[in-house]
Image (tube, rainbow over all chains, first blue to last red; front, side, top):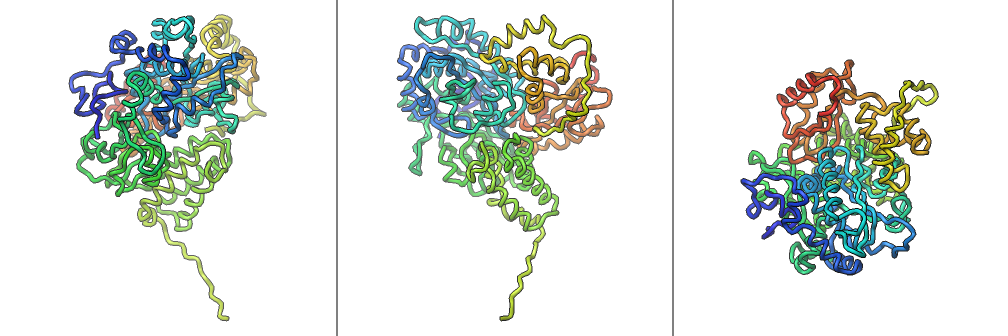
Length: 452
Length: 183
């Protein structure tokens, strides 16, 4: 399964091996002029000819599932907005807080084709009647923030944003687009944590409802979309729903379909790691062998993070897993996540992997909910103990018990951060249990049997 | 990330005569930052970024002045400043080295890099050298997993690192002029 032409990466060489190899062409940041010269902002012009509600309908029909990790249909999210009451601002927040370990796909678009994102932003603002967009980018993306800031200025100068309407069309909504830099907090990728950060507060997730579509940034209706989701809207407006649905796969489990192309960032023990564009449903083994030139040093595949550490791991027997939104139920992981797998070879210590991930969640738990704040610390301690050979089988049981007691699923936390921690730990221990048992000392519980 | 204990009852705030938020700064912030947010407090993070960039920390006096500028309480500024990793109450070194320790980087052997920095600089992650030249941080995912292991030297990302390269980068940072804290 391979794309016949790159879609999101048509201006970025090297993302579809065999089709858009870019062997000689170096990647450079596409300027506003270059972007326009290669058909850029034509989709926006086309969208502006359509009624806003029709654009939402189009995105709904295409079943564009959110590319940020949750896979929630973007068109449905857009339709949750109340009618424009004319009483104040309505916001779009673009989530570029790409901090999930293993994930680096949005960075590619920021680095090289920032106007694709901005065009998607403008289309969303037209469709949903939003007047202000905040591009929320993680603090560590210093270079990308500069590239995006420059692109935003170009878009203002080119008549996309600013007073006078989108593309200076009479009657089109006027949109302001601002860059907001975060400052190193994974939790701000959670949509309401993100809103808090823009409001100048600590990024503590909010209790929902009210949902952001009703009461979001500064108490006003707000849509929060991932960078890639907005970028995907551009080719859909250009080429239509039928074309989009021709890429990707239907659900084999009776769920929602996985249409379209997806940026997949592969890292870890492969020969040519990087961000690739592939149709949803591509096999992990195809990604590794065909896109990435196989496993590094000819080693065997041992396991992989499905798509960001929160999703948990795919086991050795799940190398052929289809990378679509069914992967959660099909392969016993949390979900597709960001579709950025980290690949491990046969020499990888899975206890190390679990400990590393546990440390991440311990460091990034925002501290608002006690089960996550305390639990993530204890999970990390237990895993350090296991790794150093100082734990007992009782510790392993305690680890799994902790891994089920915190999060949205048991209903003990406000956001899903702890669920990611749970899934990572439970799937690693579950799929590589032997490695953990080898490291712990048995603990015998004496059982007294009475004589009568 | 958020449970730094603050010696609130005994803390003596160092003061300097020259304000951090002078009239010209306030005027520029008003125009360039506050104008972007429909609620004034929204300007807090960009302002903290600017202070951190310039002073390599967020001084308490600056927090009080920022609070006055934004019409919020100093506690709200402190709350935000202590939550985010990039803001620091203690001055960071002229060169902050942030070695990524997340999963792709650990799987691709980040440990020798971290150990080399420890040995060469004589400090542990989270510490700053006595002469104020280096701060060493072990950071979570820097979003460049395909080029692991990676590290940030101030605002510049260095990819596919090995020990000799880190050594060279440290040597370069040592030679950088004292005032130039950013590449």
